Image (cartoon, rainbow over all chains, first blue to last red):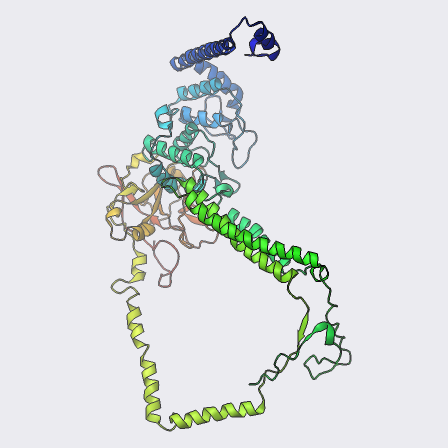
Length: 272
Length: 358
């Protein structure tokens, strides 16, 4: 929102004439910013309110159209599944939000695993499809905001993570290999909502961690631990991807041994 | 004694190293290649130019002064960047600057001395002639004489009572160690029997790791995996040892997906199966469960177990399937063990029988 007062060419003559206080520019700018900000906040608040009240027939109908156009080829017109894709009966809104919200669905091509890729749909479209799938048969819903906060017990979360998750996702959440081309992805940069949904729904080969196994508080603690790990500085210096002995060993052999070889060559070389 | 050379055979290579120098062997082959000798001595810049000599001297002394600076810097860093409790970042900075300073101090000394040696010390090549290691005849005869004299004076051969009783005392001296170190081995418990049994027994509830809360059969939904310990394990005297043997992975499959062998029909509960988490190869925790393929992967050596076929090995170095824990449900709906494992969990050991029947 560039106002004319900000431009140097117009500011100089105004100062020369002395008809406007030098503070006028600042005040005007501040007023403009406050106005735009508040009106934007008002607008988004009203639209969010609309969406919340209308987990409505309208959204479900919209979702059904999107589903028929984008998903039904593999998952069937009635979510019954085909040879190309599993049934979506009972997977719930959380599963749709995770799979479509991280770009894993729609699938680009078949392979051992659906990789994360750029998201193909808008927030509203994903919500509509989630509403539709949840309306056909019930399943885990999109998690509540209170369990997505990173204010839980990070120590407890880290212990639960080590027992339940670390064997596949690496103790630092850096991901790891599974069998025959499958892998557990790295968890850095994944939003708390998607981490929660993955635990609840068990996408692809990940097991399900239902609320009886890990309660919503447990899940919140795990998310807290992961986010703490992501943000906290590493006391040991550069992590080398947190991949453990392979990366560290390679570094030590290449650079440590390289330095020793270079020093040895220098020590034994003749001086001029 | 035998060394009759006293350094006089070390000669400057460029002055007297020539064809008359014996290579130290009596065999002279007609077609032996000629000893090329050392290349001619080459003077260095510092040998020829006094200015360069002074310059290198300054460089070396500068490195030594630099080392002093680094040492002082290490002390300063220790006080300037203290380790603050609950602040991992301070540990990192503290160790980083301490390490860099101390490394710089030592490296400067090392580089300085090596450079001193290479550029300034006399670097003329010298040849040291080989000589035989065998002593002269007189030396050899004299050493035999010394031994004989000692034997005669001490009476070691003559006084057989003294000699034999001394040998007896020397043999007996290490014996107490055997009895002392015996205590390091298990005494009242048989390690083989301890390996063969775990904390599971009839009626023990399956509990979540680490909270120890029991698990209802209804909690285990399709595709779930639970990490399980026996209930009440935390009261065990050797908690970690017991946990290391009793850790179990609990999964639920569709009952029709399970290929149950005869005799094991009652070991699962409605598709819920429990298998030992300890790999039969070298004992790593096997817990990488793929809920679509129902394969369990051991992260250490990539052994794969197929839960659909009672954890049969389908890949990797493991030799035996994971032992299955027979489970059922008690009157309150909690999952309980029917018995202990029917075979020892984990890798092989010497006393492990090969014929465990179911």
